[in-house]
Length: 138
Image (spheres, rainbow, N blue to C red):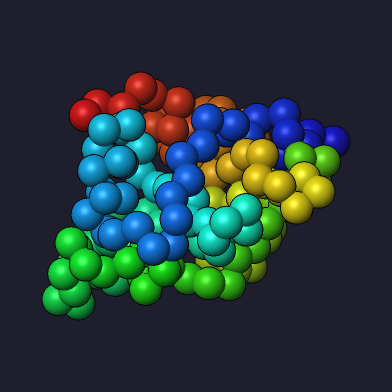
């Protein structure tokens, strides 16, 4: 059995739910990433992606300088542990229609597993795995 912990990402960027969309977009740009994990203190409350900022924020006419991350994130967060089976994690993504799962250990955020991570691990010859394994081009 391949576990989530074998290939999860541990270089995480977290932001507070009270941070603005603009601050999150700048963080994503500066770090060449597509998402930040949104927290309230030590609790993970969601994930904000570049797509969330665009579709749930900008396209809805919200001001990115004043709109808070907790206004655009999905609050029904699904998590896994580092010991969970990778296939089970993929099934969770499919069931809940998500592309990223925070990895929690004893209530503490320790990693993130994405659909791309799973593709690289499970189907290394797939197009998604090929794209996911490449260095960012921006």
